[in-house]
Length: 435
Image (cartoon, rainbow, N blue to C red):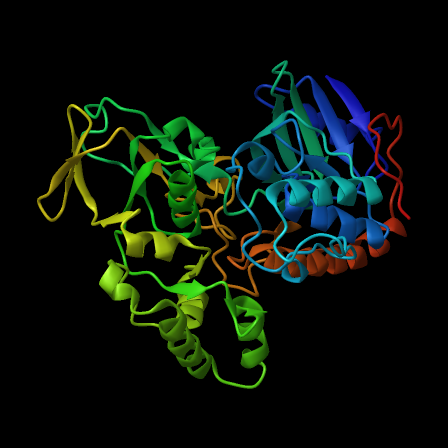
């Protein structure tokens, strides 16, 4: 077995440690001992954490299964996507958005911002490294993170004192089980594979899911002269993106500084009724809980309208109830008994965490939904050097808050251990230098 080492806690020249590391049922071809934390995921959460650590003088290694930064944004989002919140609520630590960016940056602008962010902090993820397993080894007091190269299949094991899960809430597409899906006969795709409505021009398309993505995909289909219908399976809060010349989110945050959440919810709903009308008449029934209270309790985000409601009112977008089953010849039967034919189906059904598939521990993360068991703001820290970032259900703002907490926590351990560490030798893995 080959060892690549980085300065750290215990020397690999120690025969006892080498013996313990070799005591594996199927040892990898290379073991990499990392002095600082290993971060799994090179999305905004992973980049923010690496930058905060570097600002504290702590180096890190980022492992990314894809071949680029922010693979969800670059590879799995539709072309018309913009940030749903104003840019000041989406910036990562230490770096504001460029002043010439619009209030709601486009997908391309956000990707450029992330590229520049990584360059500024000299963050160089190890791309095409898929994490197979990560498990704490009490025999050596380290986390073992085993990866496989996406291109060559070569296995590597990273040994680290600190492990940071930064794969986030949106790691894998969430595809519902639809009865008769094999009988439908037409194209069915998740929004992670949807780019533009151009390919559906003139076609009748059923969009399943009425969150922000489902609403925007319907609008995009309309703009490309398709005929979309929107499946609304549950209650939903739709709010105007802006009120009184300010973003609805920014106005809500301001009001929450002075008023209780239920009163702010009432004000939002009154303003929404005045600006958008009664959405129940359009088939979009509001939940009993207010939008902010529901967000806090369940993580369900209200929809910020960017023009979809107007298309529903004119009939350009039809609203349908939940699907009962799919049938042959591209037919869809709904729960109200109606059957209708569609050329294609787009599943705007969201994403899920994939942490349970690779992290072998049962204390910090739930095996059901792959999220930290402790709710925000306490879900960022686990036991034995395990951390989580990007699982707050509070977007980029929540990820930045967790990244700062993690860096502060590790900094104390890093400085304490640095005074008593024995350097690893033969360092071959490049780490960006601390500022």
